[in-house]
Length: 198
Ligand SMILES: C[S@@+](CC[C@H](N)C(=O)[O-])C[C@H]1O[C@@H](n2cnc3c(N)ncnc32)[C@H](O)[C@@H]1O
Image (cartoon, rainbow, N blue to C red):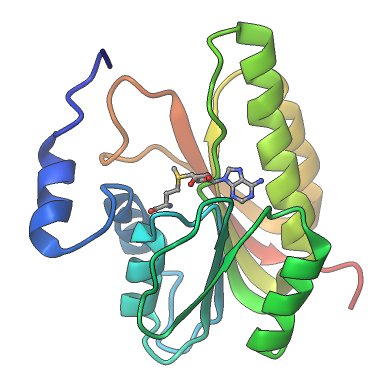
């Protein structure tokens, strides 16, 4: 049994307010703090199932192009383009870029993999998923764009973030109220992307 209250306040609030996941409140909290979304922002969500972040992105950027990809099929959301597949699949990412008519203002990743309980394996997976998000971000984010990513403490994470600092004007860390107290996750909010391939 999970050692946290699965049906906590945010879970119940999400049910009440029609969000598909309690994670929606994390993105709302990030936007409250950093004011990243504009009414016509183009937004790509990596690891988007079940779609809580997509719902929030559509609400905050009602005139923007919103797209999401996940290994798991996402039930349709009106006005949102969703793709089933791996974020590292070039064909899928190119398809999204084509539909969007070019790169994105905001690329965000709430991707996480299933943990095994074996410490070394889990830390490698956690680092791998941030590296994957950074890799896809470099193909899809506009110059001066914003990258948001979930990160778990441990392993080589600080080294990866240090490397990522070279790609952005500023990187801020955010620990969120909506994160479960038992989790060691935090988010990085990366501003002012310095694209190298424009
Ligand atoms: C915590 S959930 C995302 C929740 C989402 N932000 C929301 O608000 O509904 C993490 C997702 O990452 C997805 N994921 C993990 N690795 C992936 C990959 N390589 N490509 C695409 N999606 C991936 C998982 O399938 C899972 O659905």
